[in-house]
Image (cartoon, rainbow, N blue to C red; front, side, top):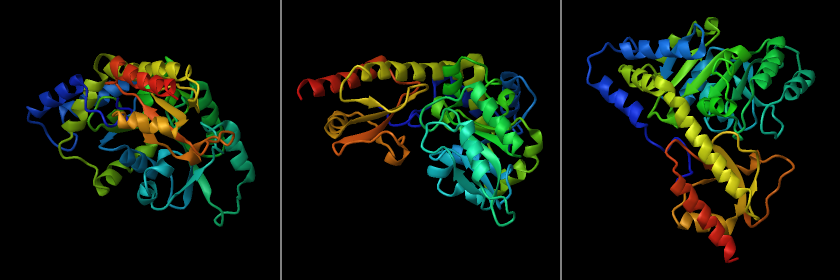
Length: 356
């Protein structure tokens, strides 16, 4: 009953098998190996375009290095109020960008809307250099609330960003789950909708550590190789990344893993919606559920071995409050979540309420 995070799983057998195969070969270093080359070609095929792609070990490094190519130190990055780059990556984005400011603009809603951006540009100061100038928009797919931006929503946001001189960054730590949810192509959910740079994560969906920064706008990639080296994120044994990505993408394996995680989340949500005393804060559109539950139930579940996390109450929508005897929790399903684990978890919930 592990619903703590999808980054707590190991690698899928297919990804691990490819890594083992690569381990038994002699290759050149620093990404000049057949696995990395093959992975990049696979990404070009997947996204139906030419692109530049660079591998790093963590999502924090991917986001921070990508953003450092998109803004100057004195500029700002507009993002969701609880975006990973502003809430959970310490000051890494500021470090790698040389001091660029993160500005939350979502006003407590689950996703950034075009109106949020328009409100920002209508009210912000433009007395440069005294006021900060925004130079990039960062959106997370799936969002910090487990919601998915549709291609149309991204296109509209990108149009507002472009009108105001901003490039568009996408934190795609759960991009696979978003694609599986939308039933659209990766291209439609990224560059065709106006995304300039995508940080595509495989770590939460079947890899050990494999994050890739994809530049659809290749002009923005001009300094990336130097920034990655200077930041200590150029891995000598690049096959570690390339082979995992090859295994992950092969035969749509990545999508199957994400579809499984999403399906488990949907089934869990279906049960939760039938139980009085539990409240889902947002619709379940990917593999994350945000639930308000009694503290007694949370203790009961955790005592029985279930794992999940209390979540930031500051991220709740303004119209939702929790009582003194309630907690706000996040549950995350993954590619290894099984029916038996989910059903055991739901049985514990129903048994708890049956004796109250």
